[in-house]
Length: 567
Image 1: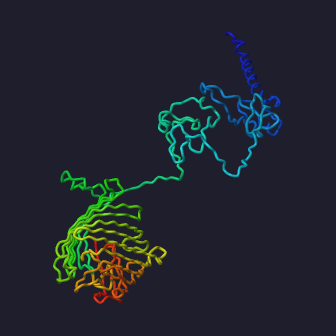
Image 2 (image 1 turned 30 degrees about the vertical axis):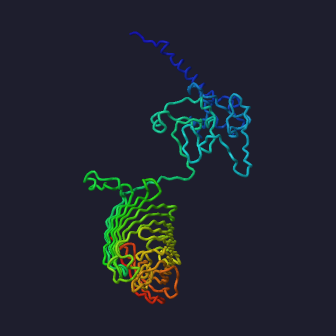
């Protein structure tokens, strides 16, 4: 047998392997045994140097409590560097270290490693000493507050800087095209420094007051309606009412087919008003058709009204029929003040006289042509047209008549409403009302245009037209009137459905412009008002009045009333 022998290569392979391990161990232990005074970041403070164990690109390294753990946590200070014009591929500037004479915690800004002793502390902040806000002036051309800022501009109140917030010239910042997010916000140009003096962002609105989004939800309102109603009162007897009212009328939108009537587009859409009304009754009949445009020609602040009417009334001494039309223009100066002017033409027929031989009545029997132009000024501040509690109503009117009769007429009406008391929730209002009507007309005024008094709407406590001058037993009226009313209204029930009134009506109507003591009328009384919403806005009215002074020819009526219903 041949005896095997080991070669030197197999016997001594551990020698180079041990050399490698020895060299690696020396490299690992070399930083730990290096003198602390030779380390560039060393400090004379032993408490701080206990934890500083490594030289690396990190400025501070903390070891675990167990020094043998071999685990370290690195903390790196912020690095300030400026990008180069060519791009961001260059390495940042060397990290700055504090002076050996002071600990790192004493510095707010790290000094440079190249010159550790050249650190200069930042200047101490000095608070302003001015007593009021200084005035800052900016270059002309800045947009005013509350306006849109065009692209490239800056908000009002912030001067346009020459450099960016980081102190870097904006021209040195490379431009990056916008990505998916930037494109969706700023467009295809991308986003750049907002303080660089140029911007691709959309216009910015700078409001001068706090703003909020307001959302309105609207639904089409009903503009057309058909109303049925009726009324009974002590002056005109029993009447009915049928009304067709369209408040979005368009006189220029004629139908092109029957389908326009079916879908409701014919004669609609311009905001005009068209109304047809029929009021038949036992003593009184009225038929009217009217058209009104709130803005003449669609844009002028002048209203136009055109109407035609047929009127038939049976009085105690004769019957009267009127057929005519009217054209008027109105202008609203303020929400409370308005002016109007119009022209009226009508044919007045007086027939079926009760007696003959009375000159004022005989002069107007048959047909009479009457034309007139009038002007009116109205100031209305009432809080409600049906049951006002505050405000006033004032109207001045002048009329010039021509045709078969030629005369002038002046009229003034004023009603003041004063709120005396009310509940905390605004209900239970107690109101005092003072009303006055004054009017006079020329000598050529015909009988059917004279003033009359007596009844619910003029002087309560008297029969209809029975407080007027008479000639030969015929009520002929007069050219002068002065009627007044003082009324106090108060609630009876908690829901204000029932109200009580105490009033006194006084005044006179004279054939000439004078006031005769023997013809002056005074009638105090009390009344009741009942509000029933389902019957309409006007309340039911019941009044009791008794004259304490009157003319010898007057006829009394203690009870007067007014009731109506509209649906």
